[in-house]
Amino acid sequence: MQPTSLYIHIPFCQHRCAYCDFNTYAGLEARIPAYVDALCREIAWMGASSGEKLPVHTVFFGGGTPTLLSPDQAERILNACREHFSLMPDAEISMEANPGTVSLESLRRLRAAGVNRLSYGMQSAHPDDLRLLERIHDTYDVIRAVTWARQAGFDNLSLDLIFGRPFQSLERWRQTLETALGLHPEHLSLYALTVEHGTPFQTWARRGLVPLPDDDLAADMYDFATDRLAQAGFRQYEISNWARERGGRILTCQHNLQYWRNQPYLGLGAGAHGYLAGHRTINVAAIPAYIERCRVMPVGAAFPVGPATIQAQPIDRWTEIQETMMTGLRLTTEGVPAAAFDARFGISLERVFGGDIDRLIQQGLLEWASAPRALRLTQRGRLLGNAVFRQFVGREKPADLGI
Image (cartoon, rainbow, N blue to C red; front, side):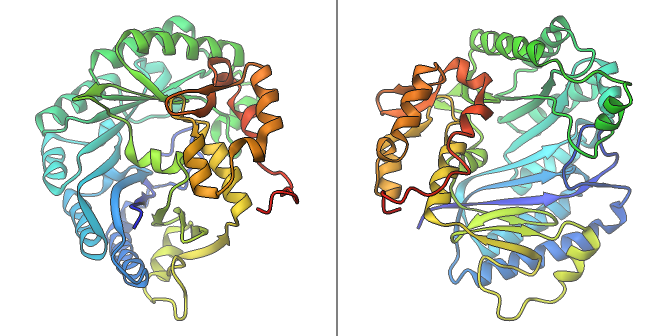
């Protein structure tokens, strides 16, 4: 059976950042115990309703701020996963963390509970950047949190950084990148700031209080980071992600590879999304509604629909093909392997998208890689990725291919 992944959403934050549009809530920490109870019930129900213990090779605690959970609560959730799913002995168990919400003792206990990968939201090395982003930590917190993580036994550590923010120069971005490299992480995620609907950043931009991101400057920052990280020994494996090599293996985020390869994962928690058994699922977003729904198990619901599911959309073969192209092309080295595509869908890439592929190759946005043969973005294509992805999604199903 194909291994699956578990995404566990922890929607609590001490403060909601100015750029965030995720399903997160500040000031509701008193609901955490009831939320953990509900989450463990959802895990139990989903495990039982699947018909057999699903093999799981990655678990990811996202948020929100998962490190607002106590170590005991995190361990309880992981134990529920172990009880109701077949968690592989070498499973990657990741947790997002705000550097201002951890201690040496909490990290030691998380490591003892089985968490083996941390992802810190560093974002910037400059105090004024962090204030503008409305982060609750400072650079000292990051340095201390990294030191504590090493002392606690974590040897797989990722840092998130944001570039292209208002008032950020290329030099300030260089300084942030150098500070991050000086902390010797195994993995880096670099994200261009996007002004999302309903966020304080959007309000400020509309009022003229902050400038909109400069796309050309952001592209220069991305190019600089690409070159600098290559010099530092990092391998870029996805548009926004770089990893070091250790023991002949690139320390990629195995959980996120599950998404980019369009493989199955189960979304657990308030607002979590999943993709399993041919359906994309969405859980109810509000914390009180999620807790209430998980008090009573649904009658007659078929897996992967669970107690908190509010939407379960069947994914047909043509939609799966389009989504596989969109996610797979984010993988800068792997791309979309021709043989794997043929084996999965029983039809070749060229037969489905031949004309589009040729046109995008002529435009310098796609290329064929060899050994194994795979379609992937060029360096220029990485900067224009969204424009490339749009060529493969939202299309009418070809009548002559028998898909």
